Every structure is written in C-alpha cells, then in structure tokens.
Length: 486
Ligand code: NAD
Image 1: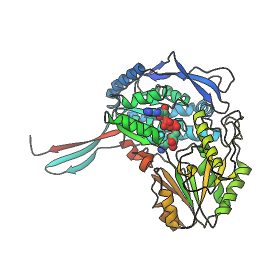
Image 2 (image 1 turned 180 degrees about the horizontal axis):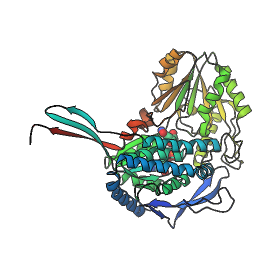
Image 3 (image 1 turned 180 degrees about the vertical axis):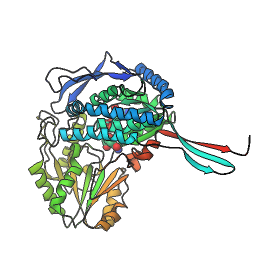
Image 4 (image 1 turned 120 degrees about the vertical axis):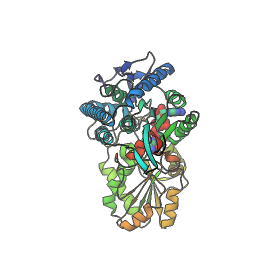
C-alpha cells in the first residue's frame, strides 16, 4: 500500500490512489476530484473507470471464481484473517484518510476501522455446512450452499469502510469473487481496502473500481455480474432493483430509514439526554439508523427537550474532524449540504419552532451545520415525514400508546426503531408492535456480525450479517439420491 501524502495539505493534490483489477494497480487518464468536507477543497484525485475496465474486471473475477469457489473454507478463513491483520496494521493511515474524506472525527474513524477488523475476523469464523434434510433407507437429501458468483458491491459515503467490509467479508467467505465500487464522494479508503486485499487474496478475488454513478448503473445492468450488494438511498435502491431485474440478479438492498424513538413517561430525562443525543446525531446524523423522529410522552416532553438542549449546549462541538476536541464533523458533500439547507428553510418557512440551532452559517470554511432540535412540528411536516440525513431532529408529543405506535409505523421505511423507559414490560410490548428490522430497547446502534441487519418495507430487501446475511451470497442447492437404484 502506498502511503497517502499531503492529506489535508493545501494546494497539493494526492494522486496516489489506484484501482485494483486482477491483482494489478490500474490508473486512468481521466480522474475525479475528492473533497475534504471540512475545508470544501479538493485534496485528491482518483481514477475514473471506463466500461471496458469494468468488463476486464468482471472477466478477471470470473476466472478467479473458478479457483476461489473451490478453495476450502479454512483457507478462505486464513486469507480473511490475514486481510484483517493488514487493515489493522494500516489502521492509523485509514483513520486519518477517513476523517479527511468523510469528515467524521477521530472517535468515529476509530470505531469504523477497528470495528471493520473485528467484523472480518468474526465473519471468517462463520460457516454454512451442508444440511442433511433426509437420510433414510430410501433416500439421502442434502441442502448445500454454493457461491452465487461474481458480486458487485456498491457502497455509500456515510460509512465507506464498514459498509464495504460488510460486503467483502461474506462475499469472500462464501467463495464468491467481487468488485467494490465506492461512492464517488468517498472513494479513497475503499480504494485502499481493495489495494490491501491484493496482499491477502489471489488476483481477481477482490477488485476495486472508482467512478461516477454511471459505473453503478453499468454494474447493475452487467450480464455477468451475478449479485448486487447495495447500500444507499431508497430512491437509488429502486433503480438498482429495476436494472437487476433484466438478468434476474440477486440483490441485497440496505436502504434509507426514518427511525422513530419512543420515550415513555417514566424516564430519567437527564440520564437519557446523552443516549438520545448520540442515537440521533452519531456520524453527524448521516446514518441510516439515526433516530429521525423523537416521540416523547407529553408528561416529560419539556423535561426531556430541555435536558437535550442543555446537553447539546454544554458538550457538543461541531468542527473539523481532524481537530481533537471535535464531536461532530461537517456534512460530507455539497449535494447533501444543499438538501439539509433545504430542510432548515422548510422549517423556517413553515414557522416551526427551534429548541436549539436553526440557522446555518454558510460562510463557514466547511459544510458545517449546527445541531438543531425542532420543537413539536406537525406530524405531516417534511422534517417528520422524510429522511433529512443531517443534524436536525424533530421532537414530537404523544399521550396514547396505540396512537404513538401507529404514528411510528406510518412511514414507507422500516429500518430501525427504539423504545426508552423504566418499565421493561411496557417497552417490550411497544417494541414488538414496531415495523422495523431492528428494534432496540433502552439502547441503540448495537450491531454484531452475528445479528441479522436489514430493513422492512422500503428500507431494504434481504439482510447483512449473521448466517442469514452469509446465505445471501449463496445459491441453495438440493441434492437428492435414491439409495435403492443403480
Ligand atoms: P446513494 O443511493 O446516492 O448512493 C449509494 C451508492 O449508489 C453510491 O456508490 C452511488 O455511486 C451508487 N449509485 C448511484 N446511482 C446509482 C444507480 N442508478 N445504479 C447503481 N448505483 C448507483 O446513497 P448515499 O447518498 O451515498 O447514501 C445515503 C443513503 O444511504 C441514505 O438514504 C441512507 O439511509 C442510506 N444508507 C442505508 C444503510 C443501510 O444499511 N440500510 C446504511 C447506510 C446508508
């Protein structure tokens, strides 16, 4: 791996980033700029893959598939563990690169990079052994799990490392080969991940290509890519599903969310405030699973709102993630910054009250947005109904349990939800009525490689992590043998 130079340095553009195709480092004449969101300046350039390069990569991945799919699981595990070691030994480099391109402060970068290492090691231990369904005098019936083939992995810009690893690890462990396509906004760490993979896997097993959204379209329509593992917005997910239908590709879709959190009247507001703050604002709220609607029981509404405001005013610093005391970084890119500005304007235009924040200073060096709480806007307002993907959270009042459950479920999304309160029976009763892939009770953002993760409704299709997630990289095959013939 080449050391990235000049990260964050003014005027010098880092051009060390390469694509990985069939074990080779590949560049292109045309390149694309990468911005540091804390300074709004270009600090790196990356290759811009052509359609021909995608074809070459798919060919290489198919050649590698013949060997890799026949490689014993224990050897695949050893390669995956070697890959985890490589990432761990380059952790510092990846963490500063992640902060520079994504904007997240050091603590978030550390969580993501070291979490990815742990993830790789855990998935390496997972197995899908043959299942004997029947073994009688007459017949032996076995279900086995064969690799689905060449996987196209398409990743967003909010957690570029972790969400790539969530795809690389199960793809490679199940015997597939793959092509990783990062978001054009955050390609650097993912290109480095693919480059490092060349030291751990045979050529063609893990390939990395950078390019624009059109590269994503070429992948989802490519006749020789067998599966698309996609994380991104629900809107793009619809395009992916449509394109994939042409060749009946397998798809895993991890899409958007509008997670509700329901707060019961028996909470300790002061103790709850930091929990709810991080539920909503972790990664500067650029998080599929951020709490995006906070339903507070009317008896404790003022108390919880005021505790949140106090926590934010006393503890939270928004700034450049490269500075040690920063808690929340900038919005990652100008497109998303524009969308978030639009949500602020919509709240202002409609006269919604702000408990804290509410004004964006557009003259700041980076795409910074103040932490903002919207005080009890109408249920049908945009800030409640849509996914802002930025640090602006609506607080809403409730009094009737059935009503709050209905409001929480009244959305096209179904990714996550949480319920908070001292009465464990009540929080579980409410939690079981919520339509979401993950329901957290008195905690949030608790993930594990052994825990299935995915969305209900338009938040996704299929899942990642656990043996269920691993299975999504396989075709099941039934083999039946008549023992009394032949
Ligand atoms: P996005 O949908 O704009 O882009 C995601 C990826 O898709 C990028 O790599 C992009 O280049 C590619 N792409 C764009 N158009 C494409 C097309 N037509 N065909 C194929 N690929 C295409 O999403 P984003 O803005 O990068 O990420 C934010 C969204 O992702 C939010 O909605 C968030 O909730 C969601 N998200 C979901 C999860 C989850 O696990 N459910 C996790 C993180 C983010």
